[in-house]
Every structure is written in C-alpha cells, then in structure tokens.
Image 1 (cartoon, rainbow, N blue to C red):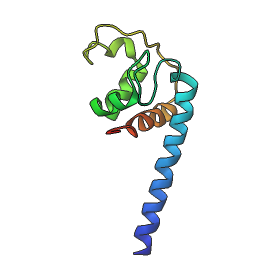
Image 2: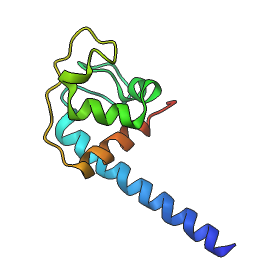
Image 3: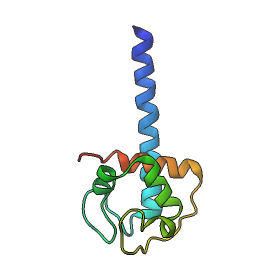
Length: 101
C-alpha cells in the first residue's frame, strides 16, 4: 500500500513540474497574445483545453499556419514558435491543466 501512495505522490510531483515548466514557456512565448482564462488577442487556455486534445494542441503549436483550417479558423496570426519537444510537451500539459475551469 505504501508503494501505491509513493507512486501517486511521485506522479503528482512530476505532473506539477511539467505544469510549472509549461507556465514558464507560456510566460516567455505566449503571454503577449493568450491569457489562461480570459479572451485576449488569441483564445484563452480554458477554451483551447475544452476543445482540443494534447496531440491537436501540439500540432497547432508546431505548425499553426498548416493547422488553422483543420481547426475551423478562418485565419491565424500565430507565429511558428521554435520550441523543443520538452517545451512543447510542457506547454500542452499546462494548457490542458485549464480544462473545465
């Protein structure tokens, strides 16, 4: 039983660390156009998280110009960010942490 509690604790710490890293990525690259819960120039993370999967979010981050029509948008002004895989993963997890909020 102790092993199960320890595993749950380790998993929650790991997920929290990703969310913190994602917040850092957000503050560095996304904050100018997006807000976590309010409409800004771009859609809020609450709206994105409620509509999209992790894979869809990551695809849009990687190539917004190639993905916007598939998402039903008429246009996009989002620039292609030069993020590594770890940053993309952390950012998508951070965005998804706003699901249902």
